[in-house]
Image 1 (cartoon, rainbow, N blue to C red):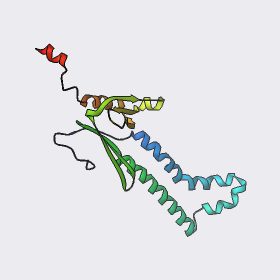
Image 2 (image 1 turned 45 degrees about the vertical axis):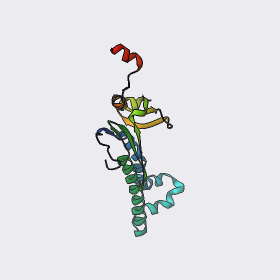
Image 3 (image 1 turned 60 degrees about the horizontal axis):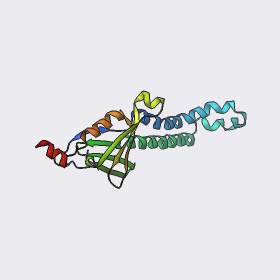
Image 4 (image 1 turned 90 degrees about the vertical axis):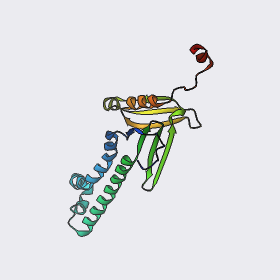
Length: 184
């Protein structure tokens, strides 16, 4: 990952993106829009008030083909934008922090990180039949700082990621007065 620099002694433990099923669900409207011109051409004859417009959907004229090409260009570009966001959005867990890489637009990226030393709690949420079957969920990481929550939504295997996060949260390094006297 070139979006952020690893500190000395830091290494990547886990990298995750939104679940692939959510990506396919995001592409579904674009697939419907891609077949819409052909479906419309087949449906118009069955709707008598629209029958006079049937001639515009045979795509025999150069202008009609050009408009169809423009339609596909717009649909393809929009679908490609969704793919770009899916591919470039990621959560990276290192042995020292969680990094959230969020692509807002083609040339607008936000990278935020949370040091594991500030983590107080990590909880998972899997709600619904389909998310339960596909093991898709959300992880909410509670911190000790000004930002109260660090959310990861639509993550695959959320329990596994939560356990890894909690595994790398540093434990108390300073022993209290009771532990000092007990060790003597």
